[in-house]
Structures are given as structure tokens and as C-alpha cells.
Image (tube, rainbow, N blue to C red; front, side, top):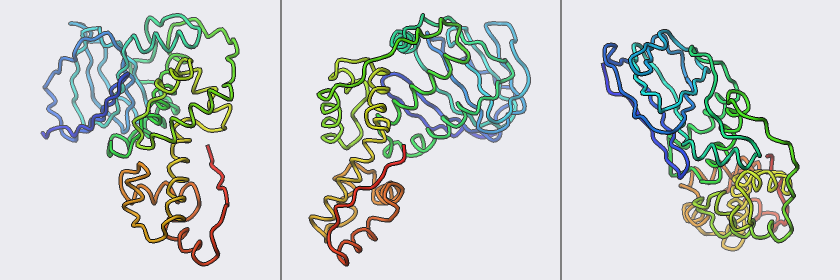
Length: 296
């Protein structure tokens, strides 16, 4: 038996935890804190033996395949027993957060999620969970806009596929005005450290979070968190052009990247070449006003 490896990430509206354990105590029964919230649990590997109680009633005994999801209500006095190795991601969202999301979507409040107690295979939630793993591994490289985007995507998918709710009315939402788009772009460009949230930008534009996210992508072709990465790389190119001798580590720090390798990874993905190669090419061919394309 060994202690579980836990990676934890919290934001204003949700908590994400990845828990891995190779040899759990098969006799230990864990009481799960009772809160008015829902959990989206995604199995990252096969989990062969597990027991779950609702109060004193044994609700499930069996395993889960990798890629399966469970969506329990956390106010049901849950207890669990891990009887084999496991690795999963658990996203906990308060009822208030889901209610606010439903209000944005013109839908009624959800009562419960319906899913197979033995786990439902869900490729969308599995891949969204995979996208969140780097942020759990290195929280310093994550940005709030990206996490907000993932949260909205996971919650919307869970509501649409498992929630007992009234479907959204389908009423169209207005596009961003030129003034609102300018506000959003200016806010992102002025805070490249990634601490800016979608909610704050939406509030400055007088919109709800989900309305703003949809309208921003409609206007720019990419999500707010992707625009942030684009702005970071553009700032890095400006610094490379203005001061050819500036150290890469300094550029990474000033542009909001966690470190030089983080700068290199993002810069290369967006431009097709490393910062060093880009700087070397500018020295050899003269400064370029090339605009790179961004794949959303």
C-alpha cells in the first residue's frame, strides 16, 4: 500500500483534482465530504474494482474502463472503497455555478445527472480531461482563460448529455460590438500573466460568461485563452525584434510564460519555428512584418 499521488488545481468556480494510486488499501472506506455540488469523474486508466455507497446502501460494486465518466451529486452522503489501482480526474462544480451557466443558456436549473453507475464511455469529456492534465502537472503554466474555457466546455457537455433539464431555447445572442471587442482585446493584451478571467472580461463588456465566450470566438475565430497565447507570442516577437540580444529567459518572464521552455513550446507551435531560429532569421534577412496564422 502506498499514498496516493494528488495534483490539485482550484479556481473561483471549480476544483480539479487528479488522484493516482497503484496499491490502495482494499479495506479502507472513505467518507466523501457532503456538499451542494456535482462532480465529473473521468477515469484515465482501467479501474478494476471499486465500491460506492449512498448513505448505508451499496450503490455500485465493480470496475470502470479508461475513458468512462461518472457524474455524482456530492450531497448524497457518498462513501467509496478503492480496491485496485486507479488514476482519475475529478472536477467538482457547485450547484450555483451550474445554475448560473444554465441561466446564461436560457435553460432551467438541473436536478440530477443521469449516467450508467458502471461508468459511461465519453470521448469528449475524456479528451477535455486530458487537456487539463498539463495545468495540474504545472499550475504555473496554466492561465485562467484556458481553464475557464475547459470548465465551460465540460459543464455544457455534461448538461446537454446527462442533465435532466429543459433544452436551451436557441435564441440567438448578439455579436460583440466593436467597442466590446476592443475592450476585451485591450484587457487581454494588458494582462499577459494569465490571471485575467473570462468572467471579468465579460463583466467589463456587460455580458454573461458564456455569451461573451461565444461572441468573442465568433468575432475573432478563436477562444479568449487562445487569443491570450497569440498576444504573448506577438509580444515576444516585438521584444526579439527591438532588442536582438535580450535573453530568452527575460522574454519569457516579461511575456507571461512560466519559463523559457514554455515560451519555446508555444512560440514554435504558433509560428512554426523556435524563438532562436526566428531571431536568427531576422538578423539574416532583415526584420519582417509577417503575420502568422493561428489555428484555433
